[in-house]
Length: 351
Image (tube, rainbow, N blue to C red; front, side, top):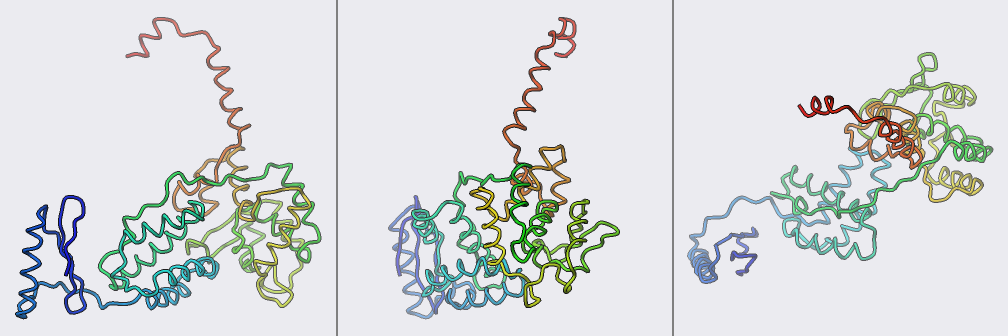
């Protein structure tokens, strides 16, 4: 049994029949000592009954296995693969601990140590995975509350801004010719003109494409909701030029879905040929949204095309170029150079 101070209050902390008991006593150390002495006496006399029912203790290692099994069924394979390393890292970090023993303070210390070697954005992504793991642990009644719920993400995280302007787009497309058995150019074209994610294009099948109506229908999206994407003439002509070899529009040599590594290698070869640096495949989606916004598209229209539920997600993709901002701000040259309003009009405005 122990007593400790946090802030102005003293607490008692002990374990009874495998269940941890923590209680705030107040600002007096002597008061805490008296209470814990009383608890000891009650336990010795078998009179201590003030223990709330707690979930059966489970080690983090065992919980992590249960979570991974759940994730394989309920999350997209690409998401599971991306998060697997993070799950394993936490499994190793917290392997010997029971999940009800893990505290917010321990996670805060871990967060500080990780920040010494990783960017804030990377630590925040790992923290999001752990936060969801404990959200599910609470839902499954493995713990009463999540120790991560009050752990904040690092602030001041810089949002990465990278997209291509029309001249760069044409240069990239011309250097995609012949790569990935001829598939890279149509894959990049579709990404640029629809905003589809790489995984959505990899899994795209001919039954999802309606050339007459000009619609691509996605069923297995990141949000697990159907999304209908309109096709422009560029996308239609691109799809019409692809030979149909199987249900998959872009099959591998064995007829299965093309692997990420194959696209990664071919895409970066095209980037090298084009002299384009600091650019990822996902930035094609960013390019799609940014060029729409810069040319007058409404943010809500772009949000619907991207399949975002919330507008703040769209804002991450809808950055405006410096030239576009300059064009907008130049409006003030015209507005403010006009003659000032007459005194009578000023009085009316003030009313």
